[in-house]
Amino acid sequence: MSSQPAVGLPSGHLTMRLAHRAMLRDLGRIAATAAALSSTPDPARAAALTDYTDRILQIIEHHHEGEDEFFWPMLRERGAGEDVLTLMTEEHHELLGHLKDVRARLAALAGGPSTGWAELATATQRLRDSLAHHCADEERELTERLAPALDAATWSRFERNMLRTAPKWTLGFMPPWLDSVAEPQERAGVPAKPVAWLMAGSLRRRQQRAFGG
Image (tube, rainbow, N blue to C red; front, side):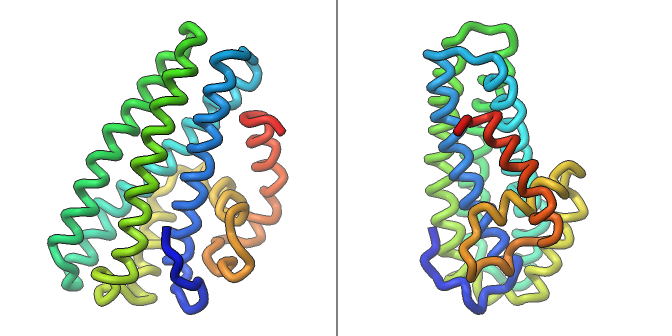
């Protein structure tokens, strides 16, 4: 993950950094909780984890669709090199396979044996590992080879597209979710800050039902 200081980064760049961090945190928690459910069944937690996992998968899928269908083509028009765009696209293709595997394991849990939780845990950990590699590559490239094609206006266009195409339920979920991983100097990357504050309790309760603690 990027070690570049947050100060001076466009808000859209900070938002992407926070999204990557939140995705990786939650995939790790999903994998750990699924592994625990494989040995200690808990129907209420299983239902909450299934719902939460579906939401995180939707967020990751929408994030990558937004990059593939809007962000990368926009950067290509602005002169970004094909080599780095090809790298990003190829990594997304690999991640898509892991996402489909996790979705298949999640679907198989409906009425399935408890061993399905162990399989979900393994598949989710594979997805997390692959996503961590991709996020590190992407955050490096955003500050190196892709940087000449980026400015505040470009980030703003990407943000507007992501907001326009996002599932409606994310409008109340994303602000507190991003805020939950933000350092004080990264708060500019948290959209709709009043929503983040208002919905923080709802997010905490949802996560407690899914993960415990």
